[in-house]
Amino acid sequence: MNFDPIDKKSIIGDGDAHYVATKTMDITLSDCSGKTLQMTASNNFVVTTGAVDAFFSSGDPDHALVYRILVPRIAEITGGKSITGSGSNWIMNLDAMDPLTIKPNSDSYRIASSIALRSLGEKITNMGTTVSGGFDYTFTYQ
Image (cartoon, rainbow, N blue to C red; front, side):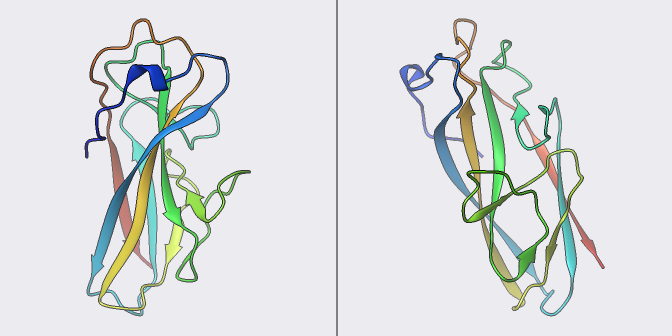
């Protein structure tokens, strides 16, 4: 997944965390209506304290940016990490702990998840023109 280009000026280095951008990332589960699944996510690099934000593996050596995975807080999805400000979303724990429990109500069940790009308020003097990272989802039938 790629974010649309972001002006570096929107990444504020004032010491406070800020949301910079959000990108929709739909997940479709097939042939699982009425089944119970657990979903975990694990980052392929370094996870911050609290495990809901992950650093990028390249392009941001000072770790000025992080991302978090948001999953809608709806009746079919329960059990995620909830922190102040998460509003209508579960925030995925990126160390494969605190799984979400999903009970799809159709055989083509769409999860309207998204990825939020956040600035931690650090200086961006060493940030490259491209940052990259990765994570894995795991779905387990219960």
